[in-house]
Amino acid sequence: MDGKIIVGIDIGSSEICAVAGKSDLSGEIEIIGKVKKSSKGIDRGRVTDLFGASASLEDVIMDLESIIGTKISDVFLAISNGTAELIETEASVMISSIERKVTRRDIERVYESAKQVTSLKGRNIIEFVNVKFILDGDKETENPVGMNCDNLYIKATAVSVDDSIYDGYYKCFLKIGKNIEGIRLSCEAASQLLIDDIDKMRGIALVDSGTSKTDISIYTAGRLQNITQIPLGGANISNDIKYCFEVGDNEAEKIKEQLKFDGNDLMNNITNNYDSKMAEEVVEARINEIISYINQSLKDSEDGYDISNVILYGNGLTHFNNIRDKFSETMGKNIVIVRNEDYKLT
Image (cartoon, rainbow, N blue to C red; front, side, top):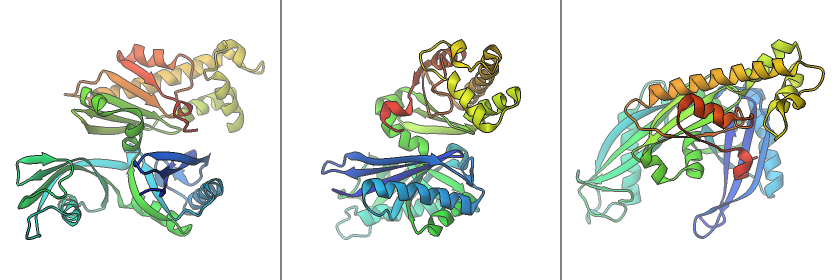
């Protein structure tokens, strides 16, 4: 795997982020290029305009190719919680070799068997998470290759998406001559960067605040337990400002940006053309509403789970002044704010 370039793409309603990494001998990935640009033709994880979405993707990939100095043919795609569904599954296969040793081909076979067992009309399985392999029904292992058994079992959680979503993305990449090497949940990709196995055992929620939606993912007992999404994000704040002050989209965004945390007093951030107190109240009301929905969704999702820590990331809410205190007051949990620049994701 040494020297292989891996490209990951996260497609949002307002922007597309593409990152290229190069693996070393130890398997570690070094980031060698990243591009973030506005997107078109995507709404909450669905392709609504094939031509617009394809053009946006091609633009981002061409810029990334220019940065890393090589052509990109294959990409990994990250998708949001709202487009996915978790399904528990089990399957097994008999070991075919005379030596009764598990091979990589046996692993492929048991995954295919799990896909067939879990297959639902109108949905496509994109990946398996929480995978456990079991030898002859009693011995668990993470990597059974080379081990002896007669039957190899798998217990896992299948991640499925609607066929229309799946087909929409494949048509986009086919149109620009690129291949989707794999699709996975955004929260699973983020979990590799933001939390470790101890966090997953103790219980933690990842809250990804985006432009038009917020994803909530719960990890307990060492595994992904639940995914939900609420249709609220940073764009709702922009729209409130837009209608309150009767301004256009660009001006509303400028006002919102001035309200974000930058170490200055809020009253001094707003241009003299607008009532700063009103702007503060409008934005705070919407932020409180979003937090209350996140809190309720988390309460509904964590029934039976012990969640004491929450990580908030994404660009929808993380840069607003006192956002950590607002979340903590409402939820009564330990809140960690992670901004993109903290992990050099911008």
